[in-house]
Length: 457
Image 1 (cartoon, one colour):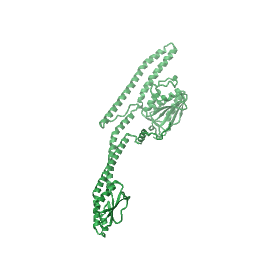
Image 2 (cartoon, rainbow, N blue to C red):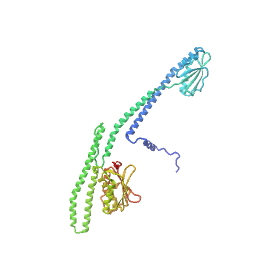
Image 3 (cartoon, rainbow, N blue to C red):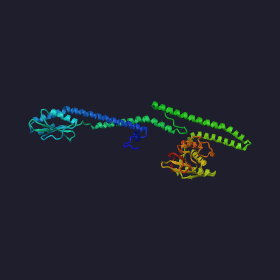
Image 4 (cartoon, rainbow, N blue to C red):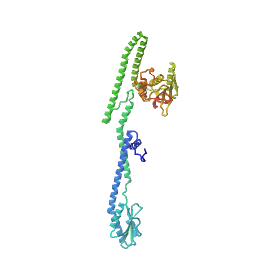
C-alpha cells in the first residue's frame, strides 16, 4: 500500500499543541484569556475609530480641499506674473503646495481613492485647463496636477491625502484602560479561584488520618455552601472510619474469649495430629484478627508527631535486630544526615517490607540513597519469585494474596503490604513495588523531600 504524498492534518494534535502553551493553573489560564480578550477588544475599538476618522477626513477633503486649490489657482491667475512667486508660501497648506512652471510627473492614479481625489480637483479647476494628472511614489498617493493659467503659463499643484492625526495621549489612555481592566480581571479571577485553591488544599491535607483542616464557612453564598458541604463530608468520613475501627476492635476483643476456650479444648484432645491442625487454625484466626485491627488503626497513623531522627542509626539497629534472630539483612548506603519523620511508623513500614522479603527470598538487602530532588529513598530488595506485573498494585490492598507466584507455605494474612502502604500515605511518603530485571522484588519507599534536614538544623 502506497503512502499518500500529503498526509491528512491532525487537528487533535494541533489542539493539544496549543494547550501545552497555556499556563498550568486555572487562575493563570482564565486571567490570560480575559486579558487577551480585552486587548483584542481594545485593538478592534482603536481600529474602528481610526477607520471612522479616515472616512471622515476623506469626506472632508473631498468636500473642501478641491475648492481651496481651485481658489488658490484663481488667485495666482489674477496676480501679475512678477508677484506670483511671492504668494506661493501664503497659499501653501499642509496637504498641497504650488510650483510655478514645469510639468507634472508620475503615472495615472492607480487606487480608487486617488482617482476620486484627482477627479474632484480636476472638476473644481474649471474653466482652467488641466494638462496632466500624475501619481508619484513619494509622498505616498501624492498627486501632481499641471494647470494652464489664463496667460498660458503653467502651475503644478502638489497635493497629497493626509491621514487624520491621532494624539499620543489616546494611545496612553487605551493602554491605561487595558491595565485597569487587566487588574480588575485578575482580582475577579482570583476571587473566583481562591476558594477552589483552598478547597483543593484542604482535600490534599485530608490524609488517611482524616484530620483535615476545617474550611471557613464565609464569603459568597456558593463558596460558603461548598465549604459547609466539605466540612460536613470530612466529619461524616471521620465518623464512618472511627466506627469501623471500633467495630473491628470490638470483634477482636469478643473473639479473644472463644479463641482462648478453643485453645484449652484443643490441648485436651488425644489425637496429636488433629490437635496440631486445630492449633494452627486458631493461630491463623488470632493473627488475622490482630492484623485487621492494626490495619484499621493505620488510617489514624499520622497521630504520631514527626521527630528529627538519625536515619542511619535507626536502619543499623533494625538490621542488627534481624541478625540477632538469625535472619540476614544487608544494609547498603547511608542517609548521611538526620531526617524528620515518624520513627515508629517508619520502623513498622520497613519491618513489614523486610518480613515480606524474607518470606519469599533468601537474600534481602536494604538500600539507602538520596535522589537529586532531595528525597531519601529506602529500597528493600529480595531474590524471590517476584509478583506478576498486573498484580503489583493489587497486593497493596488489604487481604490480597498472590498465591500463584509466591510460596503457599509462607502463609500470612495479606495485610502486611497494605499496612505499610497506609502508613506511608499517612506520613507523606510513597511506596511502590516493581520486579527486578535480575529476579526478585523491589519495594521502594520514597520519603517526602521536606523531611530531610541538614546536620546543623
